Amino acid sequence: MKNIALVEDNPDNRMLVQALLDGEYRVTEYPDGHEALDGMRRQHPDLVLLDISLPGLDGVEVLRILRGDDALRDLPVIALTAHAMAGDRGRFLEAGFDDYVTKPITDEDLLLGAIKRHVS
Image 1: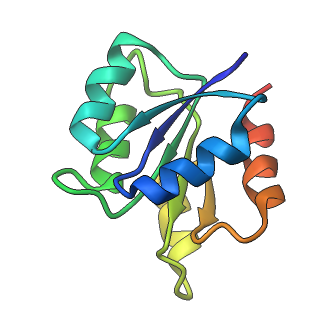
Image 2 (image 1 turned 90 degrees about the vertical axis):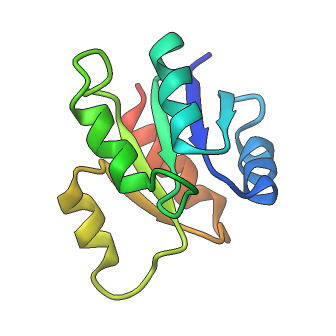
């Protein structure tokens, strides 16, 4: 079973993603960027779902650190964010995210489709 790192500070959002992915993926939860980076260095996930607005390190900074780490730079990282204004998608893809899914998640197929595009 593929392992997904979920970096999300909101417990309700973590619970929703866990429920949506249950049975298809093993999900390891991290409430902030520092814990996520430490955890992903110990246990490499197959994909990262990364919130943008996190306490401490924001998602863009976490992505920058991942891309600078030889062992983690090739991980597919999906922005999972409430930032949904015009231009946000392009801005996050340009920053180096592999995909972009907005919250709240109202269509689980969008999330599942993004994950399947990046995890074989």
